[in-house]
Length: 96
Image (cartoon, rainbow, N blue to C red):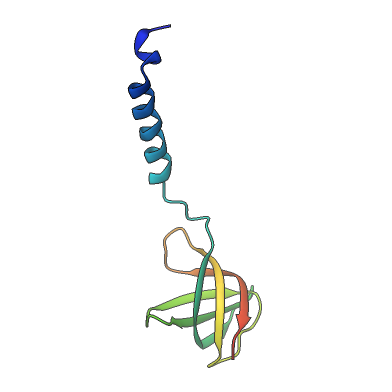
């Protein structure tokens, strides 16, 4: 076995580099939770498309299979589309 593989500092640096490399990948599969108001609901053939304004004032376009109620406050969780233009909800909980 080469001597540099027995060096604890080399192994420590290698482990740190591996951790940094793994953590640098953006994992879009993680669920995102948002709280906000639903408006401009339109029905599509697969579900409902609506606008959602979160508590920070950010507006986003969302899709859900279940129909939300116009003007109600929801907590939604889900994932962004690959191009980042549509938020696909996994769950919607009405808060008001």
